[in-house]
Image (cartoon, rainbow, N blue to C red):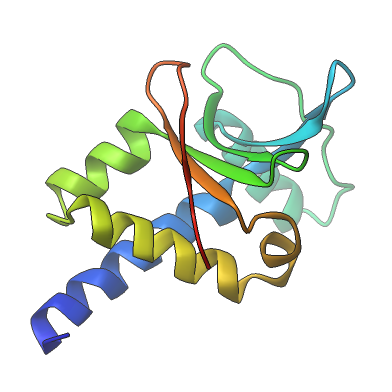
Length: 138
């Protein structure tokens, strides 16, 4: 891989990891196999304020501006990501092709021990709530 592509992949990787770290992890009693990664700008501000004031951790509640950026399916060992905020950004801003996006997520999943244990078989895009799954051999 030449150095320009490597730099682009690293910037894309930083973007994805930043988005993952900004998310609240959320589970739902009706969907116990899923862990939802939810991004909410207002909730992030509240969380930062709590950290600055040394107050207790906030309890997260879905808001009208909450966005499901990632979804981890423990039953089928799959990982999904949002079409507009993740997939489209990787395609348009970072100019990654399908294989590069797939490789990017493979590497992130391999490095994160919590994801590595659970997510070794599939990946997918969440375009407006409709997911596609492709087997991912790691």
